[in-house]
Image (cartoon, rainbow, N blue to C red; front, top):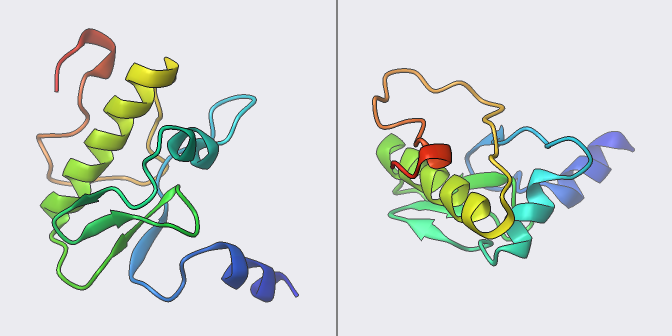
Length: 107
């Protein structure tokens, strides 16, 4: 039953790293991302999933750089439009370009 629920709510048919951002206190990262019109946003082959906005899927051509650039775009956009600084739930290794300093207008 839980597996069926997960498969209906998450983009399990595409390669992905799971839930990207932590839920901020009292809200949901996916709701914030969706409210900013970011479902379907793309950098190269990395795409904000249409099924669940807190997932970034690989259309088969994404590079790790595409994923990090899209993460930065989502964080920046959500912060500019809502004032919420999304924190990563995943851990990135080897990327000097992350995290963007959205709180100080850099990145």
